[in-house]
Amino acid sequence: MPTTDQIMAALGTVDDPEIGQPITDLGMVEAAEMEGTTAIVDVLLTVPGCPMKDTIRSEVTKALIDLDGIDAVDVRLGSMTEQQRASLAEKVRGGAGKAPGGQVVIPFAQSDSTTKVVAIASGKGGVGKSSVTTNLAVALAEQGQSVGILDADVWGYSIPRMLGVEGRPVAFNNMVMPLQAHGVKVISIGFFIDAEKPVIWRGPMLHRALQQFLADVHWGDLDFLLCDLPPGTGDIAISLAQMLPNADMLVVTTPQQAAQRVALRAGQMTAQTGMRVSGVIENMATFVAPDTGQEYRIFGEGGGQLLAAELDTEVWGSIPIDTRLRAGSDAGTPIVISDPDSEASQRFTEMATRLAKTRTSLVGKSLPLSF
Image (cartoon, rainbow, N blue to C red; front, side, top):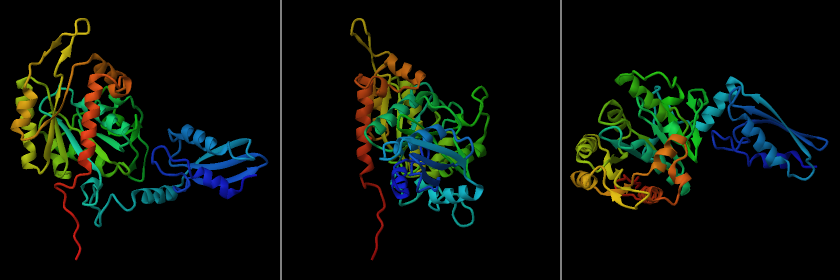
């Protein structure tokens, strides 16, 4: 018969699916004992009716059922008290979130943050900025990176649909747990409002929502945070630049010069905010007819190269028009998952590899000095 220590060691391999830490470390295991050959485990959920309770029950059972002497596992689910939740929130946050005096602290803006923040911007809508963000994030996750997406396009949010994730994030003690799909954590205003109602917010409300997404969401230890900005240079883009002035920007455009000229203004905004344009992504570059193999440049050509030259940067990649890219976005299965061998997927993978290399660079970073 396994000892209590052996049972607890096995339970230590079970992570809370939302927080990503062992349930034993989080104080979620209230008791564990044997009755005959049945292991009885009392697990405290962070909130009553936790949407991940079935996953927790399944993972606890899986962790214990193969131990010698255990023929059955009885997982009894309860919920934490307010005091226990407060203790958990403090433990998970590690003291982050609020500075002395109640001032909001954004972890990604701190000098010791190791997260690479990348704003994905465009001058106008309809150029595929969100699908680029989604596939780039999933491509990074496929390469073993820890990735989050902040859907900052409050009026035209679409990331939840493109990732195929729905539901309402769990929140307790002023801490919100992001939802996950395809290995990517995501937060969006779309999780909190009626999908059929428009968001009619002005500057102060937009600023506060963005601040909460950055400071109150428990992102964990991310390698990359991709921020899907709304088109143009409005309130959200300005607020993000104020909160995260050291973030990089990737500007998405199509080859046509009308889109390029508008995207130029979005890129030039960085000169006034401290952000840096690290590259241009040209979407809808070409179309190859499936019946003849003939290549067509439906939206012209040269816009991406011209934009990169004017912003003193490079074109990171050109994404072809592919109906599978559109279909994957509608179905919640990004093309890098559904058709990894397609040309579009290969371009996203190449850009993700390039982006991953930038995270390890110290260029532009201030180094701590001690004497």
